[in-house]
Image (tube, rainbow, N blue to C red; front, side):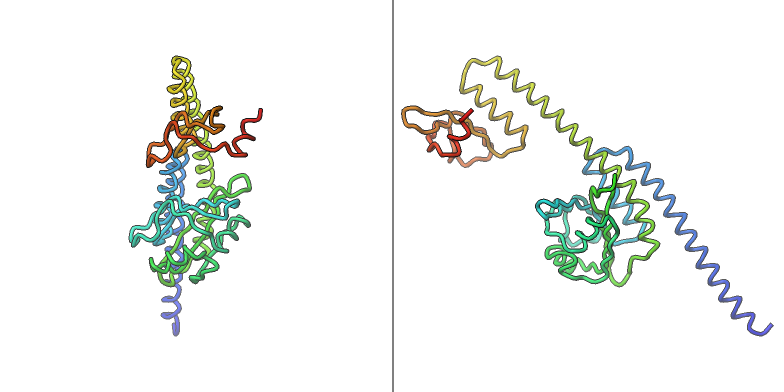
Length: 279
């Protein structure tokens, strides 16, 4: 029949395309199920985002993926986990940056935001410089929402004009809910673990100070334990010196100090110190 050959060829192409899309969809579903089973039992807040980033990047064939936490009070975001096999070293974990409009939009709306051009205002000044240096061109920001509020952001990026599709967004949106729950659980576990660690340190402190009658040793023990509990760099204990009307540094715990602050140092009794001493 005239024209049947071209029509049959077009039909075969359409069927082949449909079959490929169906295969990709099933493959992503399998990977999503595997990811869910892996992350729901993971309470390590550092390892969980890394595992998530690596798996999601592989599923959607992105060049880079990472998890970011945003602090609205300080208007700063922290890159907490990165999976970027071909990175040049510009995008690294623990970088604290000023977020761009795209991140704030995704966070505030709890909806995915796609950025297809490298724009300084959209990405933020530091991230803009990073992605230019790394050769990344398109970006997808997925809020990780649990109980109607974001707990973090999953960010993916690709090189060239390999744009994120509606299928990508649909899959990432479905995956984001499970990721958010896992991260929220890990955050809660970290908080509880931290309280347990602080309680143990408090018990240790109580044991040390109740068994010592040496005032200086007691205050040194207090300074050391308090510094460890609150993760401070230095803790000093000062007592009023009636003769000089100043504060005498009676105990210091400052492991990386340069020796400027030391015991027996006399310091002026500031107005803030006087207020703090008022019961």
